[in-house]
Image (cartoon, rainbow, N blue to C red; front, side, top):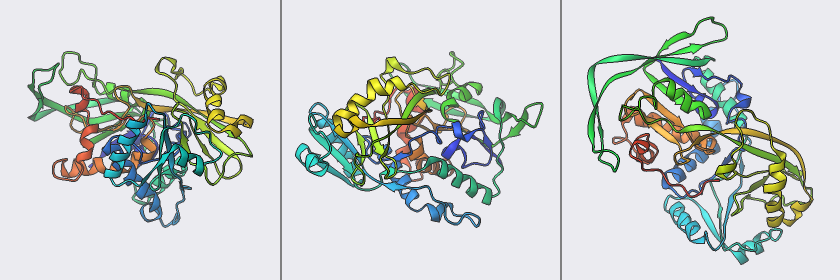
Length: 420
């Protein structure tokens, strides 16, 4: 029995077939991410997924060691995120804190004075409240994690094929099944007959002149920023007359910049992952005065996604003034390098799409994480596997339901307030 995984990085490598349009892992969202992990979210499902993945990272040698690589090292650096709020955002931050505590996260509250006493190098003017993660937060090397997964897969005799999916083959079902659409403001409720499934994929490979057909029992779409286009190849979002297939997978490319700077007098051991109310983030990289930072642009200023070129003006105009205001010593920083990467951005609600498609039930999604994929990949992958094998009602994975594709059809977005 074959399972086709169309994907990349830490999500796509845990597979029986490795299929993706761009074969260079160096250009994937995984390799170009900051590698952060946190439990500070506002939605319980996001909190739980990240906490489970953090536990996996702490025990990575147990899970991913092999005979040839007995000591996989992803350079995990435990360090809390410091989420700060002004008076306008303090009430929401407190609600987030209560949610996180209910989920079992270890989070500390900071008043402005407490913040000033703990981080004397920080300008706390305008900060009403802050939260700091005591466990299950920090950062790691994403490329090392992806490499460890690949080595583990090889020890299981996983067949990794490199190529671009260029088409799908459908199979007409002899025994039809039904999908019930609920009554919503845009739908009167109806029963939809399902009379076809994904039979396999056509894979264009460098060593073959014509695409190779690969039959599969299940097909997993974890193709990152290209997931939406891959779903369209299967007919998802292309038939406006069909009550289910008219809804596309709303995952698209969004470009984000990461800047590296040097500031020898900056904070070291006591420097957390700082999340300013403005949306600017910064953390140290090692202990040699090196830091990385970034910020998501406003919706109407999204950069072009045709390439991975970096806009340095964005740093000097939109980021540096806010950095220097919050940490005055950063007025003396010097930018040393930068890079850009693509988010698999869910334009619907900026949260992952996890689970089987309601019509093509043998196509499942692991995509649309919008910057959270590297930290939720392990837990989300395992949860999806358990859901498919056991059924969501039979297992202990009810937290996946908010991420289902059905929320798009039913127009019930998953609201997450802690988007960075």
